[in-house]
Length: 474
Image (cartoon, rainbow, N blue to C red):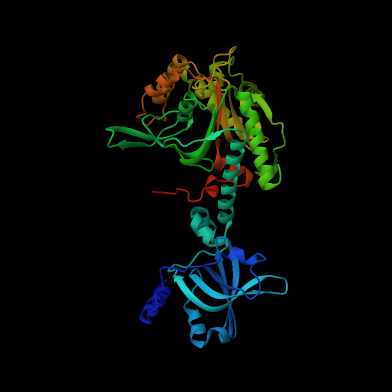
C-alpha cells in the first residue's frame, strides 16, 4: 500500500491527477463483442485492471467492467516511449480508461489497441485474488468477491433476474404491485421481535415491519382484491446459515380463494422460474438431488410428525410430547403449540427433502389464519419446505374482526410470556382491526423468502451468499 501511495505522490508532482472527474463517451466492454463493434473502430473503454502481461515492447492489460472483460494491447511503438513507460504506474485494481481501436483475432475474439491510457481511480489497497486463501474474506465481504470476479457477480445478476421474473409473473396473473410502509406504529403480521425506533414528529414508537401482510390487507379492504409487494422485512432475532435479520420477502394476497389455491400458485411460479431462468427443475442440495417437477407432496403437520416421530400432537400424552420436543419439563397448557413447533422444526422439517407443503399448523403459530371447521386447534395454513428449508408459508385468512381481535390478543400474551421475549412489543393495532370491521372478503395469501428461493435455485448453503452486502458485525 505504501508503494501505491508513493506512485500517487509522483503522479501529482508531474501534474497528473490520479482521480480525475470524468471519462465521457465510454463504450461498455460487453458491447465490443457485438457485430457492430467492427475491426478498426475507434472506441473508449474503461474498467478495473485485473491482469497484466508484458512481452518486450508490448504490455497486455485485462480490463473488466460490469458488462464484460477485454484485453487491451499497449504497444510501445503506438503509445510512444514516455507514455509506454508510465504504464508501470498502473497496479492491479486500478480503474483505467483507454482510447483505441477494435482489433479482432483469428477466432473473432475482441481486443483494443490502445492509443492512450489514463488512470481514473488509483486502488490504494491490493485487491483480493481468486484463490482459496481468500475464500473466507470473499464469503464475508461480497464487494471484494465482486472485484475478484467471484461468485457474487453471478449471484447479483441472478437475483435481479429472479426478482424481475417474479414481478412479471404476478403482473401477468392480474396482481397489482404496491409499496407499503417500512415503518409502522405496531409490530404485526408475525411472531417475531421487531426493531424499535422513535418517531420524533409523531411522539411515539415506530417499528420496522416484520411482515407486509397487514398493510396488504388494508389495500384489499380498500377494494384491491389481488395485490403483492416485493420488499424488505426486518426481524430483530438471531442469524444463521438460513436467517438474516434484514431480508427480502415477496408477499401477496388473493381475494375469494383459499390456501389450497395459494399452494397451487407457489408450485406454479417456482417451477416456472426454475425452468425459464435456469433451464431445469433439478437442483443439488446437501449432496442430493431436489426435483421440483409437480405435483409436490401435501401432508398435514399432524400426520408428518406422527410419521417421523410416532407422536400424535392432538392425542399423545403431554409428557411424551414435551420429551420428544426436547423440553426438560412439561410446559403450561398454553405452550402446547410451542412444543409442537419445536418438535417439527428440530426433528421433522430438516428431513423433508423433496418439495412439500406441510399443512394445518396450530392456531397459536398462525394467529391470523382461518381455523379448521372440524379441528379448531388447527388452521388452514401451510409451509413450503424444500431440502429441509422453509421457502414460503401462507394461509387462508380469518376475516371475522372479533375473532381476529381475540387471536391477536392471545398472540401478544404468548409473545410476552415467552422466555425469548425481550419486549416491549407493540400493542394491538386498533386502526387495523377497525378497518377489518368494515368487512373483508374471503382471502388467502402467502410470503416467499427471496434469499431462500435463491439458495435453492443457485445451490447455495448460506443465506449470506445470496445477499449483495450482508450485515456481518457492528
